[in-house]
Length: 124
Image 1 (cartoon, rainbow, N blue to C red):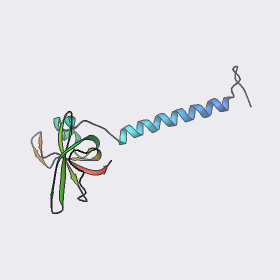
Image 2 (cartoon, rainbow, N blue to C red):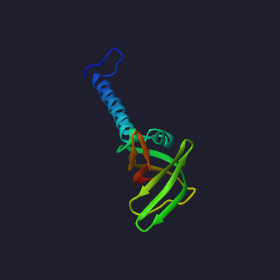
Image 3 (tube, one colour):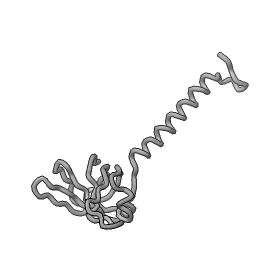
Image 4 (tube, one colour):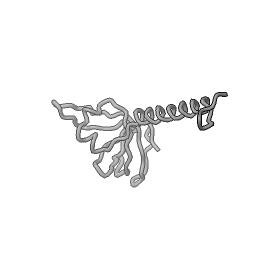
């Protein structure tokens, strides 16, 4: 095994370099696929987020269930947004949650979006 001037083999240095690069790439991929944003940034420009998967965190401020239609209001220190729940399982009011879902603004008038919601995919 060939050694460098400090006595560490080139193989070990190569393995360490590969591990560091893999961790860096994994971190960037995690940030890309778990796009954590503030609720206020979604509300400020909902059409920019339309159809995109985002992750938001906040406190549940209210909830509504009518038949199969269920949603709750999630608030952080920047704003409040509706979160639609596909299976009717609603968190408790006051509970702090993190949600991953798709931004949906069903009504668009010019460059304005009304009724912006997050369609929940995952909650923890």
